[in-house]
Image 1 (tube, rainbow, N blue to C red):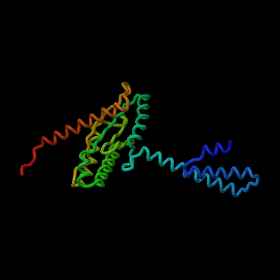
Image 2: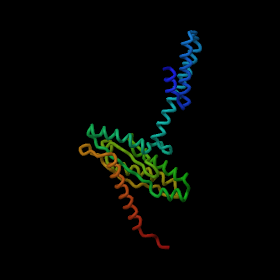
Image 3: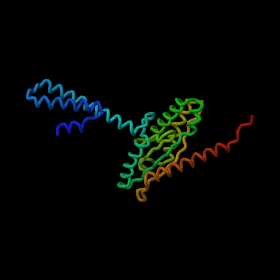
Image 4: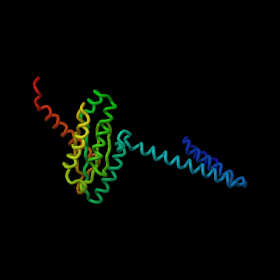
Length: 229
C-alpha cells in the first residue's frame, strides 16, 4: 500500500518532489525509532520552505494565465472569468453594468512605421489612459489592439463624462508624441438585469458599436478637404 501511494504521488514537478522526499525522510526517521529532534526540525523546515515556494510558483503561474504581460490588465481568459462573476452579481442585485470596447486606431501603421517597440508603448499609453479614466473596474486587453472595461453603471455619472475624461488623457499623451496621434474607437453595451443577456451577446453588441464609431470617424476624416499644394 505504501509503495502504491508513493508511486501515485510521484511527480515531474521538482518542488513537489522535494516536499514529498522530505516527508518520506521524516516518515523513515519515525519508523526507525531513533528520533533525532534536530534532524526532524531541519526536515520540517525544508518541507515548509519548499511548500511555500511551490505555493508562490503556482500563484504566479495562475496569474500569468489570466494576465496580459504588457499592460498588467486581464487577458481575454481573465476578463471572461471576471465578467461572468460580475454579471451574476449584477443580476442578483438588479444593477446595470456597462461594457466598453476600445480599439486603438491605426496600431498597425504605428508598428510598420516606427517598430513594434513603439507599438507596445502606444498600447501601454492606452492602458494608462484607461486606468486614469475608470476607477476600480474590470480592465482587460483582449488581444492585439482591443481593450475592454466592465463598469457598474451606478458608479458612472454619464458615459460621455468617462469618454471625455479619456480623451483628455489621450490629449496629454499626444502632446508629448509628435510622430503620430493616439486615438481610440469605442463601443458601449449595457447589461440590463431585467432583461439579462449572455457575456457573448454583450461583447458582440459592444464590438458592433465600436466598429460603427470607427466607420463614422473614418468617413468624417475622409470628408475633410485636404489643403491644396
